[in-house]
Length: 310
Image 1 (tube, rainbow, N blue to C red):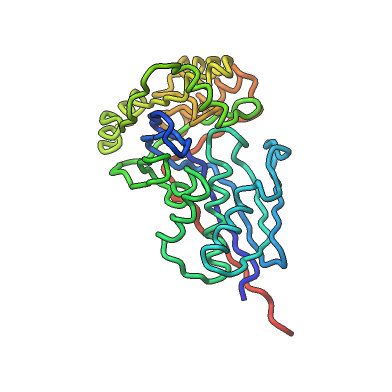
Image 2 (cartoon, rainbow, N blue to C red):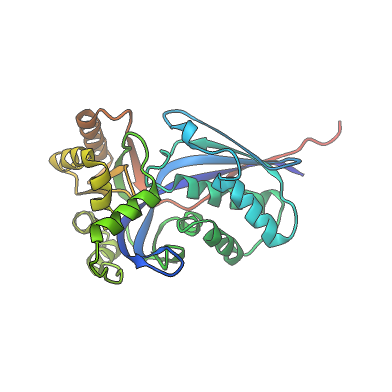
């Protein structure tokens, strides 16, 4: 019997994020290009009499991570248990490296990793379509976190399809101080839009073309985020890292998702280190990351078998 499954769970950024009006379900319609990057949480699942969640990590606001039924990993256990019609009670331990409430899908990727871990731990052998269905019920970003790589997301972001893309890219990632609530950023987006009719979101052809060509310079020029004005309205100091990244020669820069993390596309790893260091110096940020992308979605990294009787 397997006693433990370890799963690595990547952060995501949105290379483009077009936001439409809210539908009848209350969610805004989206057309986005997701990109998984090499900044990972680790999720460990172990059999238990009842479900529980613990968290650890350094440089992360752990007090902002719930450890009860509000945690997306906990909800993933409940959702998959309901889907298969049996109790999959486990202890979930999340070691966090991804900033909390930073626009990098940290909670969503932990949920995706929990689904992968449960499937492996209990040897469920579920089709990927089943896991994607359960993931969509947990949150808009969770299905992509299962898939990883580079993909388009439509609907509210949960309808995911791979993108034809070449090459890999280097990113400097600088977390903002404190988190930004995603619902609050969307509410600010609505306030800024006022009575204006918000057009239907569309995928940018120039960005998709740059990915197909593997052209980092063109990709940097095409990065776009419709939520960025709302994030800047709520957190005006985000102009400081964006300006610092541009001054450092980043190929492109933007607020990631709902923020407040800022990301900078760079020419190579050395350039990304230079950009990171200059942005960190300009902002006084506690840390910054240099990461490649794209990377695969949540996947098992290790399994441990329970010891039999001696």
